[in-house]
Image (cartoon, rainbow, N blue to C red; front, side, top):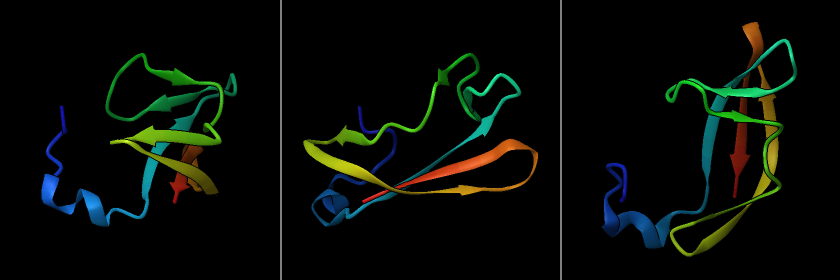
Length: 70
């Protein structure tokens, strides 16, 4: 499953950003899939045969966080 990603662009993918909301209990909650929780952003993510490393975390208002992977 590719979730709408154009397969022609995959060889050029150098990184990506994911976002969620930090809850009062410290867990990260997905904005798009209700009930999905993470303890924290993973240090590494494997996607489409490549391994991406967490490069940074951006924090915003109302618990907003995004993890940047490259």
